[in-house]
Length: 197
Image (cartoon, rainbow, N blue to C red):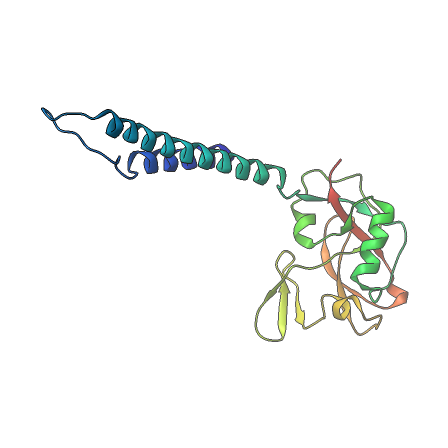
């Protein structure tokens, strides 16, 4: 893809070079040519060439920056050994993942589903952050599992409620995703995603 972008930018530069401003002086058959006019035309071409080289260099730099800033695809790394209720906040869950797997955070259902190689089977159930798509103003649905609920029902009210009447998305060892009670009696691990080693 990057090579195609580079080739496209090169073609654009060459086309702008070919279709660029005409040289200062034009000559016709049988007419006289003055050295200063010919030199001015050569200078026009040299200036246009410099501008083209600058554009090619800028495009190459932009392509290099795009390559170095590619977003890493996060994969499921495992579950935290510690359990939490659903009201500990997304930050608390992310921090627990970072302690268990350096540079990781709580998984989304999409990251979990798109993981290429799963680690050894994890025992138990773990919190997982749903990827919510709206059905209407108050009801949302997780894009991966298809579970739906009213505002906050799939995230323990934004991971801020420890109530047994609230639910948050969880994933089991076999990958089944379903809502889990948010209270401390139902505390579970946290699924963690990061860049695969």
